[in-house]
Length: 467
Image (cartoon, rainbow, N blue to C red; front, side, top):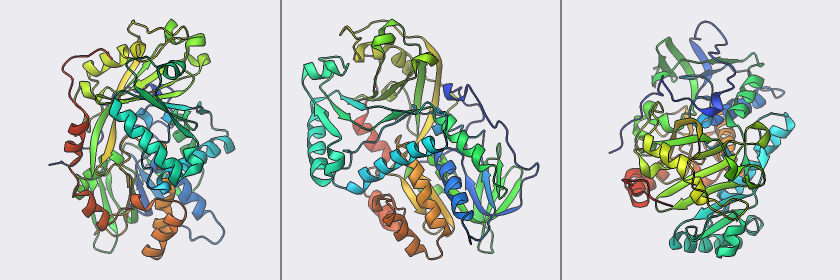
């Protein structure tokens, strides 16, 4: 039985992405406002998107002026977005029978790229191919079937994916054989410094006088006010809001306990590794990587050479506890060991050799993902909670989804007619499969629990095995 998530830890592990902090301890006003038209909880990529698109709508000619209050438990972008793997890798073939999902992820990727270019945001955004190494024959078989299906259901995006399964081709991609059984190569991926992207969005938003942002103000509970509004209780007082948007991902069930079995916290672990000779100069990686297998769901990007070329490597969940954990204050020693030692065995140098050395970590940290019962994000108004909206449950796949999920929530929040607003969001590209409604909840609860599904795919490793 899933239990509600706790509050974000006040003693979080130190993420590499936070080494150049901005807007620390920001409070637009000294005192917490007692009321607001719209309150947004959370300041990661989802919260930033919600506020960015809200302000765009509210600034348009003839729009009714509204006050927007943002509440953040810790610092800005201090949770999953500020702790992730630093990559944006759409997986077009993961849901090949529903083209709306792959189209949405591609649109999300293009929207982020355009945002960064238009506003000249310095966040190390670099487009590059994505490679998903596969480590079982079953994974390769499934990939062939999925990519073939995608090429039939969505030919434009299907052309951007191909399956590689010969030793020669895998080695050309830099993958070690015979360990690697196959790979999916996607033309569309990017690496970035996610915290810099999100804080730049907040810096721009905070120039708008209708926005008030309060950090270090965790929301303890949300309850009806008795006047058709909602009371958000904090340790600094109560705020009354007409509408509430929870951009709280893994922590959503702390405020909506009925969603505890739909979005389950899951701790992921990251490392910033010095490349050493094996991954420097001509041997540096040139793509985004993921490594997928029975005991693997790992991910890698490499920062620019001029900025130390850190290998940003995360995963290793099978080597330590993860599911049901909402505390990002601890770093697991076994997972850390795996992350320092795995890459020289997974990747080849430019000379086609596998390395053996343990890489040096400059930073090791954890972050909390929100695992969805049916693996898809939950976007929309919470049933039986009129006026409370959610964009959460990305299952470790937030960067290719969250920006446009936030935009879709804004369409619903500002819509006068609920049904028409939802339909408009779908017409704008939101997959129907993402909609939060009672019917989907019922279908999801017929599936195995998140915990059972995870046990079926992840097997606790007692020792660090050779890759």
